[in-house]
Length: 454
Image 1 (cartoon, rainbow, N blue to C red):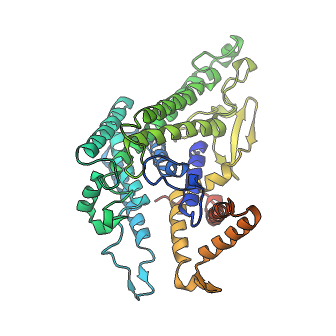
Image 2 (image 1 turned 45 degrees about the vertical axis):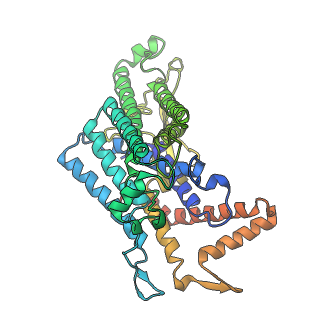
Image 3 (image 1 turned 90 degrees about the horizontal axis):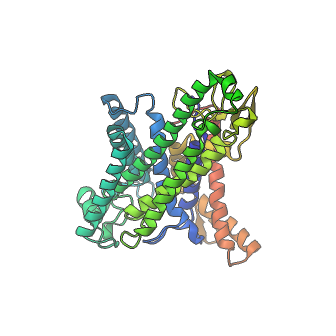
């Protein structure tokens, strides 16, 4: 089944960035660090972008079931959400055995929540709500209720500070303070309470996916009708306004307008509800979802729709040989432009098919088609390389493989660029080498079309 290439690239780009920002082991540029509290850096965009993509992909995944919440779809959502949660918890616990103490790592103080756990919960809750509610109006109303109710609770029972956040008390009660990221403060940036607005991020992604997928479906239907009367269409000087330019401009415009409005709303409300990743504030949801729409708009145009917006005066219209429609949605619910073979994107034209290489398509699709597996693999690899068997001494310092490599790269960049920015460039370069290592490890899976879904 062919896939929407822009979503694979967006997902892969986000995962590559997640690896980079999670491994800034030394001096780092401010853009590659999380904001201490209020505010937002590019690093703070990575996780909400991924949840947005989860929601967008969900619309395409459940197209075959008619986007209806049935016992079967509920079971699928529950099973996958639980699997992601359990894998995340096991990753927290890994490597299970404390080799220094010679015993199992204690679960008494093990952190319960983390990135994968939040993805699992938000995927399940967001999926159930999206399929149950169905329409744009109902889903967006649910988003408003979730965000409004969440912020009202935050303000009524505390405040938006680290110490006064009501989620601290809720998470400590439900999970136990000893199982949180910061036990002394009873705070966890991926805690259960702040996962509530993260569900809204998934829902906004679903709305965007519904808008894009539904729009492409309508284009497909319109062009199919026009193809039966192609001679009339050409003789009349082109296709109708409804199908002109493949009808994809409104899709791109809709994403742009929706994203712009969300960003402006977040900035306007920032004084009331500060943009804050730590508590996943309502403005953080709107700001990051809006930016995600704008990024997807660009990627959608570049990877899936570029070249599809054609002038009917050229006599090309939107059709293609063999009955396939440029930029349309096939029976599986995903767009005809796709990664094929070595990652080229198919580009149809009247009379023949050409293959157009799209910049970065293969590289990011490798991550985008085995995303959560890449995340788990990175976590496992870094923990394994920290085990006693991989530790060694250089001079008087004990090193893991990663700390040694980071030191070597950092020293090289400091020598080349000086102490001003050399250490930061070295940290960035070292994290990029980790991205390349993980990419090389999962490339064979991509090459063999093996996609591991958690």
